[in-house]
Image (cartoon, rainbow, N blue to C red):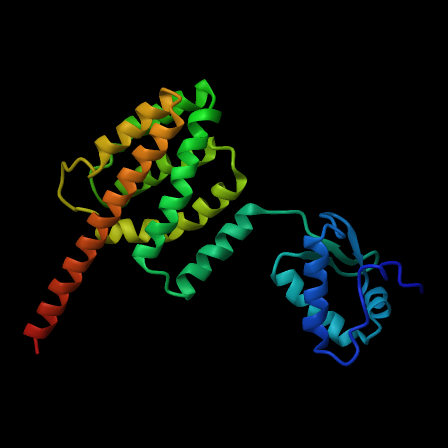
Amino acid sequence: MKNTKGEIFQSVRGQSLSTRIVDQVIEALFAKKLLPGQFFGTEAQLAEMFQTSRVPIREALGRLEALGVVTIKTGAGGGATIAEGELDQFSIALAVQFMLVRVTAGELFDARIAIECRAAELAAEAASDEELVELRRTYDEISLGRKGRAAALRILGFHRSIVNASRSRTLMALMHALEYAMLSLYVEAWPREEGHVPHGYHALGRIMDRLEARDAEGAFQAMRTHLIARRKSVLDRLENEQASADVAEGGGQ
């Protein structure tokens, strides 16, 4: 069989075979020489294409599948196909990596500031009138969540709606990934008192006002001011709780 993708791929003899195959496929994908939904090949075809045995091909395909680069169908008519994009899959994988590398609370807020400030700016320009009405309704419901997880879910839902209204798929995927980590962080730090209106509620109202006014720069600045203040208040609270826990632990010894 002739190497029909010879202009894309090279022989991997004498190299770390499966790793080099994965590298070449990813490079070809970024160079747009491979496209979503394109049939990539069977194990036999790929072994001939890369001039190697099926063992490293099988290893490379396993890694590419784990990375979400290819989908693999077994049996008659099977083979590997370049995957269609799934942002939710990416978001979940990224959220897991945040946990595994122990991203700090401060780092999470830094990412939020970068993502949500730009999203607010774009949303002020791109959101439909219907989306702004729904955003206002979502904002009004925040005060109904008096404590803990309910409040955190309402607030994150409002922030997520702003990012969705930005129309930026990249920002939406990143925000989705952050939500998993932020929910746990908010529940840990959130005030537990009954009847408490969530801290920062009125600051969110200023963001909402700027969005409704179609004021992109004002929305950017209002979001930045709010998130910087929230970063400080949450980190201070976590630090105080940790200090109290350390004192309690020391007193019990």
